[in-house]
Length: 255
Image 1 (cartoon, rainbow, N blue to C red):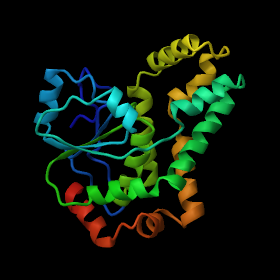
Image 2 (cartoon, rainbow, N blue to C red):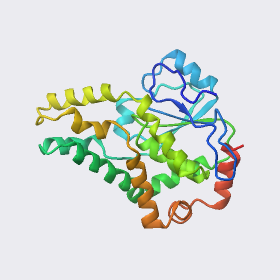
Image 3 (cartoon, rainbow, N blue to C red):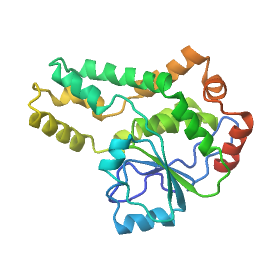
Image 4 (cartoon, rainbow, N blue to C red):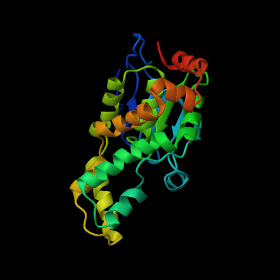
């Protein structure tokens, strides 16, 4: 099956099917999807979402993002929201207005943001994974604004709970580099900063914020290992995911 689906009004729309777990099972095709925001879905792509069997959406955007860019979804779809954050626009704006923005500084901001995702958002992540651990037999879509950072980190935890190896998880995460319009987003940011009369900032300095880097996700995993003693301990002790809930996740999404 095709991993990247040709929807024209949403970027970075991908199927998580086919990934192998450590014990030889694989993620079911057409059950788990990830993407960027859904505010521009036209009628044809709404029909495509319905035809894929997607009946549930998990939205990781903050309330102001949801209000400014409301999703356009078929009426058959229900939505759950979890306000998550990784290196927000405010963070990069503060860096730019300090006049000290550089590629190295922005990259460090992203690494710190991924560590903070693990450190600061356990309640929201627990709620998300427990919702995913409800019995289901339909397609589920997870998304944020860009579909690369918050979605990438949340998907990494879900795949970890399914016992997909970290190397595979990182490979999936890096696919966003091929299917997210980095240059277009950078142009929008440069225009935004120009209108705000910010100090001059280069494309090079913004690239770490607009792109993806394996070291970002690995920083989140390093935080899990250092603070919690590994993914399994983090899932069970910190996020409160029981073995029976992990079994339901397997029943839902593996074959």
